[in-house]
Length: 391
Length: 168
Image 1 (cartoon, each protein chain N blue to C red):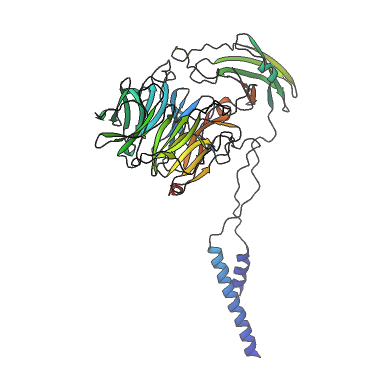
Image 2: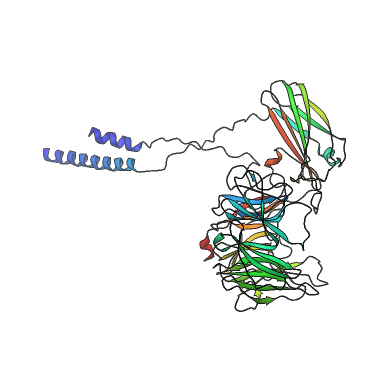
């Protein structure tokens, strides 16, 4: 009886395991940079940042700052510089967990738009900020099949290009003899890694672009779409599971009240060769930059729902044709360059670059400059759901 | 009568034993621990002992020239007199590829509690326009803004910081 009574009393007493919780952030200390509560900063402080690129394992992110290249852990940790500050990098891509391929020029002045660049290889841990030039006269580059090596488009004459495959260490693996009649302005790999799609500016009086598909095994090339005069392909076309998506820039028609070029999102399948507006985004959508998810099922799009709407990051599920806004822009300038967004390797986040609206008046902050966010272009990680969302 | 009492006491013992067994099992389970929802006190709830002020009108009047005057306001908001307050002012560009940072230092010998003083700095805000390698900087759609970062520290560890971003 006594034991039972003790058990009865003891059972009513819950173990008082007191756990303290950390203090709430002070007002203004919480991070909501004006892109929505889900966006988390990946960088801070001054500097014009751009061209984010996640490491193959997703633990680090590389990006350009005022032309030079740095990387840092996705969590906390120090920023690591890969090039000297006089470097003019336009794009950086990981070729392994310890090496970057950098597209740009090793010194200023900045090359003009039409001039080809070089590709440099940089390795972490070498400590010298040294880069090695592995290819010259490069027009565009893309990571190779399986993330190994690089595919580069090389300029062979004023209006002729060729493709080459480079190994991780920069050695030429293969040069394709089938030349491209025009300047390659962007390229990307097919989901199966066997073909690439090329955006090609072809010779002529006015701007004229074509889409070519290049078979990496057979070394053959064919034209799948030709754009009308005055239309241009913005950035690299993206090869998805539902075809090839690309942004076409066009001038507004006279009398429509504006002079800014509009950008439409188009899709074409390699076999049909008939471009159509990408389903799911709406006819008023203005696309700026696009990037296909690692599994090929979704497309990250920076753009506007209509010409007067704010710029946001959207994710288009290509199978269900659902367009989801994953940022809620409140007075932020989101960068719209073709390389200013990147998927994390697992397809759960997209990195974008944004800053607050510039002010003509001085601003005073009660923080060191290295901790400031919205005053400068900084990187933000935006969760977009898992890869299953693309199925 | 005795038989009934035995039945009742037996039933009571059986009930208590069963209840005890269930309570014992419940105690062995992994229920969520109770949490104390009282937040920890913040490290310094009493507010900063040093306050810096930068006049925005004066900041707006600065030009990209040498000899620009900027007065930094310093207030001792703490309960003790402060001595040897070191002020460090750094002027840099938002373009981090430019190695043009300039540093200025001043010291306030004494500042009584609740006291306020202004310290003038004469800044060279001219832009060299030269990169780290000595070649002209990249053309930019808008001139880079100046960043003026002011730090105040005392030997006793009291500190304050303000950063101004000034259009170029």
